[in-house]
Length: 248
Image (cartoon, rainbow, N blue to C red; front, top):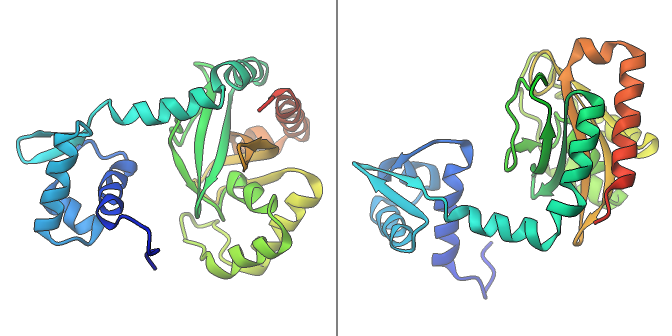
């Protein structure tokens, strides 16, 4: 339901921009219309307005994002001092882990990567980068973010969210998912394997808040790497020490 004070046209413009979050390089007006549910005339007006304001550019029949869109993200990262408080820590511990480490936050019913570091030889099967989004239920990042909420908030999440079958191993049982989230809250880490991508596993631990929002640190690697207890314990130790060194 739209709040009384919301600017509906502005909200529609943001929905157009969100169409590009899937990584599509360009979209036609017909595709924007289909993705947003707006009629063709509305989609056309919004695309042309965003083009006039420098957020979209048109090539042939399609629109694509311009670098201007990064200015808002850059302002967020700068205002929260990511360059000095977060990135050096991620770089240091990614080197120690010999893999990748990322900082993620919750964005509604999904998680979003806001910082990341990886060595060149790290096996990144999913291709995460800053701005990548993840579903909450089938990922370690998402389960740890949910686990950080109050019991009433966890109950609301599990009453609203519905699992999506992404792999043959994706857990579709909400009672089982609840148990995993409760374990994450008790033990201070979440571990998920094969549920988002076959062959990949993730570990996530809590970090302090960024502004008023909770954050988690996570790493993704081959399930074979985490099958070894010593390697799992080492990865968890590195994540926890990295979390302690982040000052937000």
